[in-house]
Length: 367
Image 1 (tube, rainbow, N blue to C red):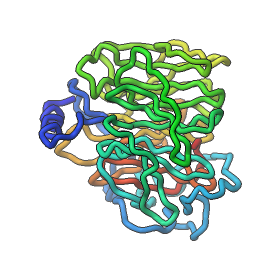
Image 2: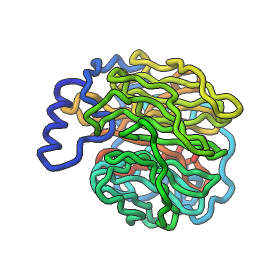
Image 3: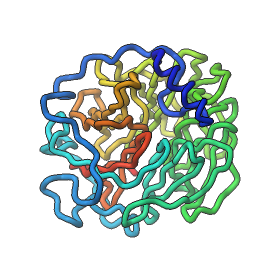
């Protein structure tokens, strides 16, 4: 990234915090590209607001996405027609973000039907669970390590969290009970993880917390054990966010420092092919991190301005073809992760460096 990010990293270290997670590589990032038409306008950016209430202006209490309890998955939405931002416009001006919880560097949101939303409070080294009436409780204290991205392995019925320093794939039951961690092979700084229906895991290693960046890359952990490198990058690329398409035939990976998103085709057996870049700094407004996907295959990218002096971010929404639907600007915050949830899976949860936010959308997403 740019020089001011290096200074920011040093400043955080002086505060006795672990090296920063998220998109804070020591590499040089390009300057932000011009936004696509509609990514910014004269309409003020959406500002996080306290309290509950529906996010869509026409939503009534109890509408899809307005309940974050997870007590009953209900009739989860299964369709998505047209623009997921609905009538909000390409700049997201008609959407309202709710602030659900605060903390010290939040990341890795993941919804589990019947259990609700789980996310990582990285610098406090713990997993948190969102409460139905707001706020959160600790699900698991990790100890001396840094929990970051989390997946839900439906086959095993457990949460899997990418942990750095030391490297591990933590396994946690939804009641807070713990299981033996999984190895990470050559990867020594896991950052984000996703699970297939068959129990195979894919995870990234951008080496943000490790002095040896030679092992940056994308890795997979087959359901029958072991770890295989999908692609490694040395000190060139910082693979960060990761997500699957609805049919699990595509794996998406964001690269924060070079500001791009790649697609890896997956065989029926879940074996990846060569990655192809589908989005670059030409299309992306800012540097990408976490990724979410809806039932139509649309991509939701948590992006932050690489200039730390401009504390702003955005969630951009793209069709699977790379055509942009629009964006949800976030004033005064830098997004780290995104995930769908709620009774009908129409709520988009967004973690930032300081808060857990939510917004109701017109499409159901993959939890």
